[in-house]
Image (cartoon, one colour):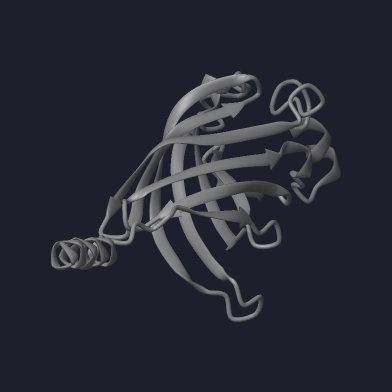
Length: 192
């Protein structure tokens, strides 16, 4: 009887210790000082104009083991500065971003696709000026490692997508000023 109980205890011990360790998803908080959404468009064919938003927050959940993740980003639309006071007043107005009524824009992921342990595309919804549309971010670079200064696990990525501004009720001067707008995102985040 003692031999049988010892054998069961031995088997239970090894069954418990040989079980695979399941990695938990890690939540990263967006570093607002190194995260900048930008947008670019053709200005009457003369040049490509580019502007950036200076205040972005959110979180990213990442699990390399299960190849799962999520992205939740909020952009302060009033933090757009074109560098030209007159254009600032117009681009924040009703014809464009209407930041008085819609002070934030959001991107919320629905699916993150991986190759190996790196995300390559992020499907989700962009809500801008009260309109929500599906978009896909293409990830062009991704890095995860300990941050050399803050000594925390960190990740960073660059991604882009193209949308039509007319889909978000901003069609003034289309097609002379391009309807297609390229959105790029440089993001860094630290482990929570």
